[in-house]
Image (cartoon, rainbow, N blue to C red):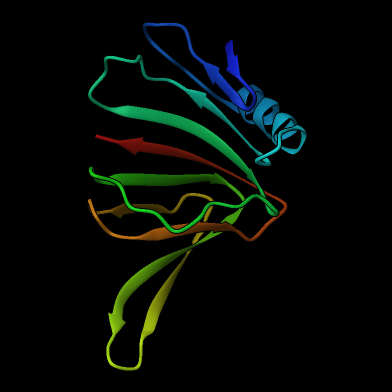
Length: 132
């Protein structure tokens, strides 16, 4: 792994394999960062598909956001809830939220433009994330 910046490492080009060692490394590094998460980027800058192995501490914070491309998540360890943010209900101004709970082995694909927010439930959640 090549250190890029706080909480971010890059894999070498070519075939990439990750397992228990890499998961344990990211779990150990996540609490040391200001954002309380650590990632290993397994894609190269010019790849069309961006793939990452990410460890989130329970107290990490990701604001609601959307992507221009679909995003997929495969939970490898722990439990995460992903809030799907709905449309504002006028005139009351209420925004509905739909939580999707994911445990190790669960997969979620979020279409482009859908506002979502990952919320770790367990002390640490490790997942593989891909965006095309």
